Length: 134
Image (cartoon, rainbow, N blue to C red):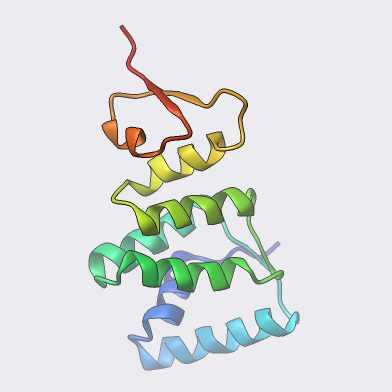
């Protein structure tokens, strides 16, 4: 098994270090052609999104587009890919924390989607019910 780290994806997308970016582009060419396969973990993906948005100041919609292309590669395996894609879609369209969007995406197809939380951002998602414990 081969894992991919956040800095590889960031270099590939940010193109901010010519030498490192060249190697990342070569790797992604092998991934696109099916010559290489890697595992991407949820924490790494969330780190990539955080760094691109907070450090590189890339817009949510641009990050969504770029990450969607990467997640569509059949040679990149990540558990729960469809939930992740939906959570990034929510995140790109709303001013809601990425982790909250992930939780919402997990609940989206549930019969009675409910979440215990004091975070009122969940109220922006009309398909789930936020419950404050008392």
